Length: 68
Image 1: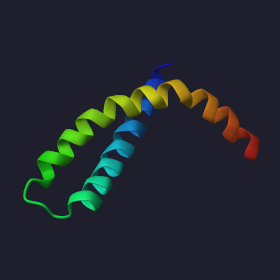
Image 2: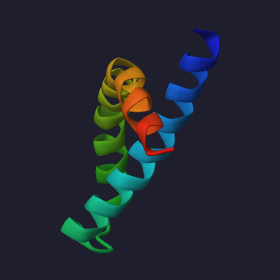
Image 3: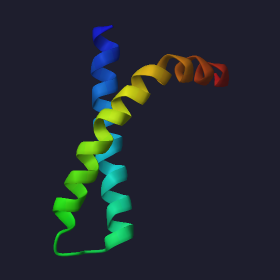
């Protein structure tokens, strides 16, 4: 369980940072308030990404093992 939580925390952090950064940049470009808007998007996205990854992770892992 400890490893699963650590993995989910790191994966959701990484994906939420990169995805919100990319989508915010696509929508706003290099706006003067880019960082503040990106940070707001990330603060909202990370907890959501964590919960989704934690809940769906085991099922997705089992599905991915079928591709061996």
